[in-house]
Image (cartoon, rainbow over all chains, first blue to last red; front, top):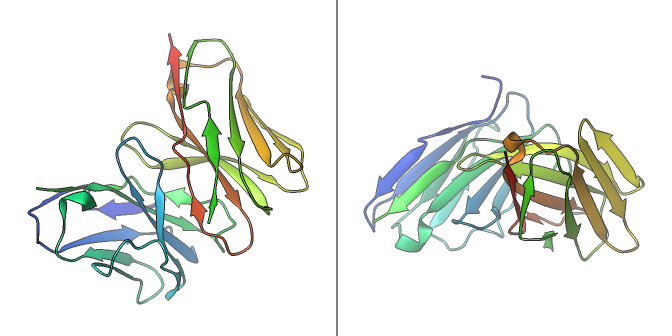
Length: 114
Length: 110
């Protein structure tokens, strides 16, 4: 596809479950970003990859959050032992080179933790 | 982190009118980007202005940048109902991570 895709689009999890959210960036894009967006708020930065290297994970809210991009393309954001406060839209974005470039966003995954 | 703060928080105008929204930031930048988010969707990049530029146009969009005041403005001319969305600015510089503000929610009334 031409754009960034994310799956699933919607995820409902019971508190305590683990979830995995997938991001397929635009082919050839070096940089990949994850954001968390609560209702009515702007996206909050979680983590940033350049190829397979995770250069910045300072936005991850706790050690229950883990992201990987093992081959420098597809990325997975994993949340362990989900809590209600994890309910949000998780956005993935990619850019051609570094973080200073235009970012192309996916449609997001809406996570609801019951 | 470098966070852009958009102002006003909400703006309601009639179709055909112009809409102006502002962004302020705190530290030096390489460039500043504006994004639009329609309800329930991802962000769409609108325009990028570099730190050595003062004004940039793209279709009905006009962006200005004043680095001395650390501020930017986005003007949408001849607004349409389809412009209804939230607008975010993203100031970028050095190795700072980008944190978006709460955005300006624009409503264009047909």
